[in-house]
Image (cartoon, rainbow, N blue to C red):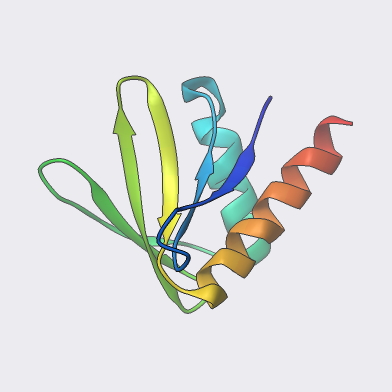
Length: 89
């Protein structure tokens, strides 16, 4: 499992990127850390809300990611990255 938190060039958003095979592990980490996530499906992306923040979930070209547009959201993604990194080490 490789989960990576990447900053975006705009300086305000970041994305948690992971393999398609790890989608369920990421969902479980979100549930374990923040409880049930609310989600809403769009045409090209979904929105998710957990931990009091909203995220975009994209799964294009077999490259899923969660995108945060706030510093608080980035902090939540960092918690997920750390949980999954320690679970596999």
